[in-house]
Image (cartoon, rainbow, N blue to C red; front, side, top):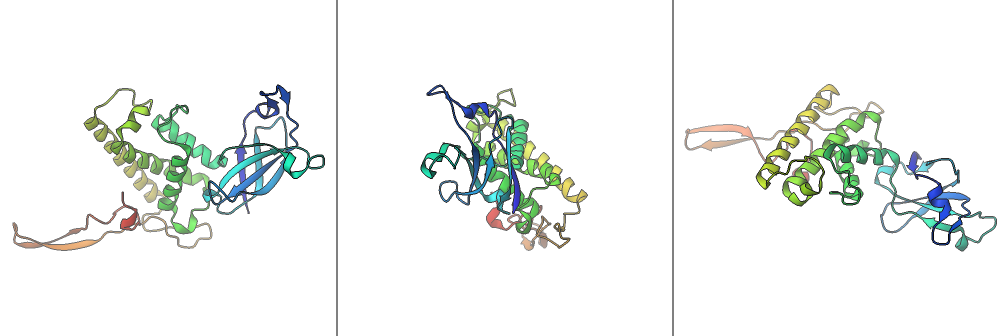
Length: 263
């Protein structure tokens, strides 16, 4: 089982029923988990409601919490109400704090801070974080995010969205920054530079953490972390009259990913 923490905001927002101008009798909060965003939610924990706390936590989450979806249910006292009567409120999808913090960090860095009209949705951010974890940590270690994982994950997510913005200029105009409006050619140039900067920073992280040629997981076992994968191809040059050996451009040279993962 894994530990999760959720930010629920000001408890008074849940206690006050603004439609009927009454105070709700909230007894507990249930944490629901599912492998799907739409169906299959089940209760993993029931926490006594604390009207002074803005957080709720549990140690009953799946070990694969990064790939799970969550909702909260606010219920009345089970001793006084039937199961059908207990549920007062059900939240929309909510993400563990460790994921929400990364989303907030990336939103701030790329200027996607207008939550009324965001360039990218929370779902898009979560998908990008999951893909970033796969790239940085490999298949064997993607169910956990340690504190040391956050900087490279943020850089990878920024790179992911920079590629999207280069090909979807409408996204660019939804962002608050850069504040100076650019034409399409300038947008492409700007985010191409952003991507190169991200790649250079990731290469530095990999070198400092000894992950250029693989690395170790928490049990000191060699994992599938990023490593260089260079394909060499020999071709005959008609202009030079000699055979030339070089890198195959269709294979990545920075991350250990198959061509299927290439954009």
